Length: 116
Length: 111
Image (cartoon, rainbow over all chains, first blue to last red; front, top):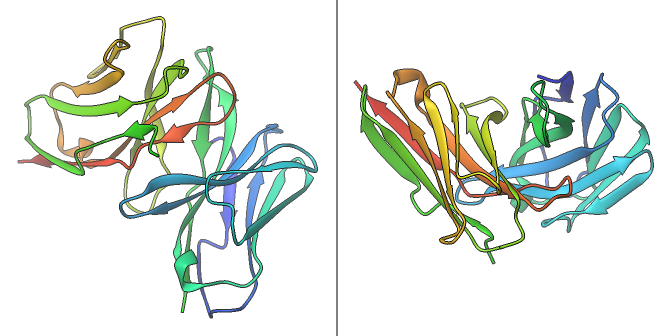
């Protein structure tokens, strides 16, 4: 699992409340990513980070912000949650395969978020 | 505009037969292609990949074929087993550390 832990695993919240999801990795990987997975849309990149305090937007970044103050932690914040942000959120890191070659992404187990 | 397309949302295959999952892409700059497998309530896991300089890569029961001229790749699973029932995502990258995923194909292996 490349040492990736997501917390919480499940969360139910109300529209308009702030929500922060945490991704923690133990292997000092430089690149970290946040995706959301929705039926009919597959995996879509929200934001990613290429180092401490270095982040960039992905395909569906509106309504989300991220922070990375330490190598091991990448936080995803919904400033004011909306029902359209009900989804399963996955964190990922980029690392080389044990057999070598190009980097691939390893994913955490996901956070299921329901915004009521 | 989708750069990676999986046009079959689902596929049912008899146990023991071959499963073929297809994927098309539009960006000719993609140079690395991947397949991920996802079980319910788990994160996607890497399955197999192929570089654009190859046309085939094999790993046990799994083989990925790449046809660059057609911008098409396929994943073959032979023989299909019950544990292969999952959602399969096709993905592609163009040299940096960002990967573009397709919408996924749900594979059902029938007993």
